Image (cartoon, rainbow, N blue to C red; front, side, top):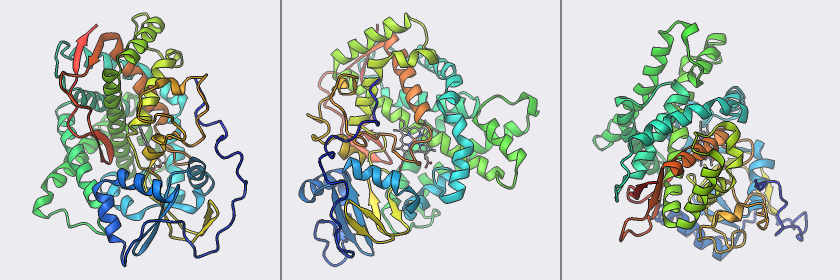
Length: 469
Ligand code: HEM
């Protein structure tokens, strides 16, 4: 497989290694902000990525936004993004307001924590999500996919593929975290995940939230309650079991940490990590598989090529861990989908806690940084004809992709914890899907519009024509 991050950026090699230093107190160019800059916020809340794109064209790869009381820099240069997230990692925290909103659901987990607590959590969780830790999950994922696909109605010209992949994503993460299959509570959770994501997206851009007991926040309140009950019910059921009967899953590993060191791992910490694994682990993968199905439907020749590879490698059987690396073209179709439709199109906004220098600009402590990954993925400098679906871009013989230009899973120490699980899950599900079905675009259907609601989803729930092979 083509290495995605090991090439030196060919677009920067000719540049001076140490860019000219701008005087302290000066800022990169950016749109006029008026007295408060709140007009910029209004434009951003209308169409965040479209607005960033316009500003990038006008002002370049480092755009300064003065939105009182903050200074914000939008970074779209791959090399500078890596410099920020890798080299300056120690100087960064995530934007406090974003984390405050996420914490309402995730509590204090590896996703929301900073500093030593984050490090301890990440260290403890890493083995479960390492390439080795993911291997035993391959048959678990394959079993969930086989059961789900046996219930899908082939021959439907208007099959609700997004809902169906979201249910499968939830089934898979429930098996991985709790060794449990999707039940009635999980069905309720699908609605709850949607309602809480919509509420979080809306609250994020306000400096403070109305209290949750306000009458118009009923859906959010109910959503938080349903998700909390789902997680707590699993924890209580496990604790009621004799320990030698505990299955090997994420919950058992977290509870073992709790029993070893209850001060470092109180039950609340177990709850918070389960919630994060549950939410971060199914929404993004389901959204990505939904977009992949769209790409397959809209590009029949890529679909046939992927099908031929799957048939040749698997000969009709379910994939094993050893098969995954042999499914090279299928993996390219997934990478190209993640390029066009990154489930996290904008990384969590960062703030530097001490002055840093980036691209020659000496930026003071408290500067905020936004990285719109989707804009970098759609940049014609790194991806010619950026809106065309071309899995071959990721093949071994294709021109090198500059380091940092493709980062659907983030980069640096805070790169996606579930990156290996996510790629294994998508490859297994996609392969087993192609063994059984073909997808097509229903007659008269227009391409779905991507909408950014914490994750990137189609504006209307995606429906495709599903045929049995
Ligand atoms: C296609 C699927 C996925 C995509 C596109 C994705 C994307 C991302 C991205 C971009 C980040 C970094 C965010 C930032 O830097 O601001 C992230 C972080 C994270 N992801 Fe994923 N993710 C996926 C699947 C998963 C899965 C399956 C899990 C399973 C547990 C997971 C758990 C996490 C966690 C816990 C973090 C926070 C890590 C930290 O801050 O140390 N993700 N993900």
